[in-house]
Image (cartoon, rainbow, N blue to C red; front, side, top):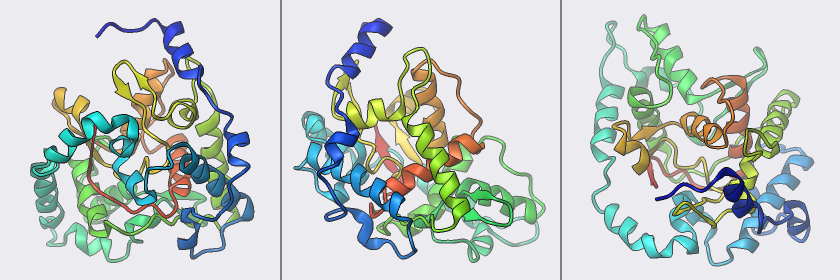
Amino acid sequence: MRKLPIAVLAAALSATAVSFGAAAQSNNSAGTGLEVVDEAMPDSVAADVAAFQGYFRERFPEVEFDAYNDGVNALPQYAERRENWVLLMEFPPYEEHVERGREEWNTPFANGKTFADCAKDWPPANVYPVYVPETDDLRTIVGDINACLEANGEEPIKNLNNGKMARLVIAYKEQFNGERINVDVSHPGAAKWYEKGKEFYWTKRGQLNFSCADCHVHSSGQSVRGDVLSAGLGHTSGFPVYRTKWALGGKPLGTVHRRYGGCNRQVRASSFKSQGPEYKALEMYEAVMNTGIPLKVPSQRQ
């Protein structure tokens, strides 16, 4: 397909942009995922979640809340392709990778222990990223997997974006499929990480001068170069994902930080380091916005 000039692409995405703040003012916490919150979520964060989720309820009223974990496949604008996706899911293309990941998860280290031994002390997958006050840092599943390897005298995995790391993250997260995302931001330090992620999500960057929100909030459901832009709601609930575009390049699986890097490059911006503070903060913000969405790992995306 012929590539659109940058100026034309930018205009296509921004022409129908809606003011998120204005559209969300009419929504409140009713009908959002906030009812699953166990911790004392700050009022300002709860208001952000209610506004974000309320926006998508208004934009796509026919989409059930839980269905957002199917990503773009849930949107009405994707209806023509959905039947093919449903058929594809009868024999998911990621199954062989999932099986391999389960084997790797249960393969003993040299000392006889396995990832399962480490994971006994891990939080459930639906509450990641987890703030650690002692280090003022965020725990991610990717980080915990490498910490487990090092603690057992094994070499950490260098490729944090796909391959074995993605398979192992799937092996852990799939055990919690159906559990609703519920990240604790009650600690002031966690709230600071959340604010960093929020700033990243809404800040324009790159040659195209786009933010994450330009594509996945204001322009969600629109078509660009033959693809439909997914909704920000539910975005992280299926990662790691099997992506058709990545499969064509021989590396079909990807962690959410792989997707962040790709998004940055697509708007002609420099990407950040996987598991660096920028993407960990962004992962936290998106997870909080997805409060109440059930995990569905792995998932297939276009």
